Length: 333
Image (cartoon, rainbow, N blue to C red; front, top):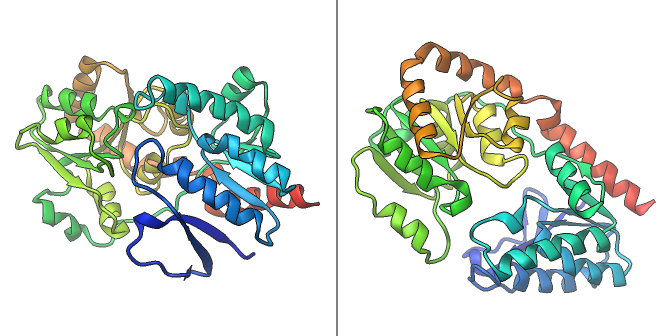
């Protein structure tokens, strides 16, 4: 298969034309919280419609209206709509209205809707009366190779809790941080991630002064990121509105003990509480669960051993790939 990926031009200093056999096309983009995706998508759609390709895969329901372009050009197109974008706190007002409308447009203009979890499929059926193909994200099972990579932050194996994700309200980093600080834990809380734009929510979090908090910013080196997963005491997952979340899938594949926000999506991934623990979206709940984790060393060790068993065929990359290929073939025959 020849694969092409469209890239936001402004995000790349180096612009190789090919990486690992995949063609890269850099289309115009701007650094804006609201307009960057729409701006880049428009030029990407125009470019692809004048290209000789067999099928187009689009990601995120924000691109819903652009499906009209590929439809007019009679190009077979599938879209992975991602999460409940219209419910995310960062998209209040017009942003929320746009995302719900765009998600509806996606169900009208695209040849195939793809959701990444069974629970998200149910939501699209209930709200938009449109069925979809469920294809989850995958993860490669990995064991620790170089624990010393975490030493740069002055943290020790099993001596910290770990949060990974963008510093946006719907990932609930504020709830996790404040709940952790009220707990009796003497461990550290390592927060990996940031935002690419100026934002008061992220700035206020990073201003909190406590010797137990470690803000690393973005960690782009995948080996270092993997070691942070491998060596944490517990990985805490606060993502609220997505389906199958890549950061928690990695936590499972890398053998982390997991404490996750109690949502239908997280329940699906953890098979209720078979492969991790759940907390409510309440300050006292996260505090109590951290204190519980502190006392239950044996249980945490068991969860660390068990979590990798949650990487069933559904989350196997080869299986995920084969499902996408099936969809693409169905669109061009």
